[in-house]
Length: 125
Image 1 (cartoon, rainbow, N blue to C red):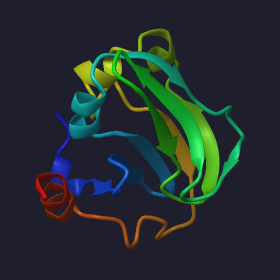
Image 2 (cartoon, rainbow, N blue to C red):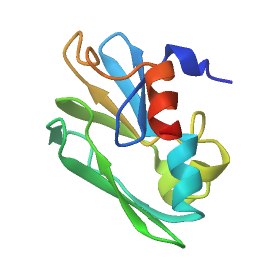
Image 3 (spheres, helix red, strand yellow):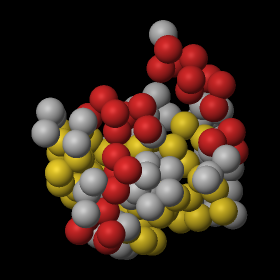
């Protein structure tokens, strides 16, 4: 199980795990629960340049369609094909097998994002 306290978070309900300058990004369990059963995931192509705050993908559920936002500037270096093939992974394991994209970003790209306590406070507000 991922240690959720080591992740960064966005107000758009994304989590970011940093391994050097490679950032693994997914949506939180809170977002997955609010979306309901995820039935379709559209992700950007590897090599796509992304800008923080812009839409880079789509997550469709039985309830609604949600957008995936880039939390940082960078380049897509990997997408999770398993989630594209089986979108239910987003609900079943949002912090493990349900990750969405990996972005190569500048060092310090996650500075200014929320820590776990701030994210929990946001979702409880």
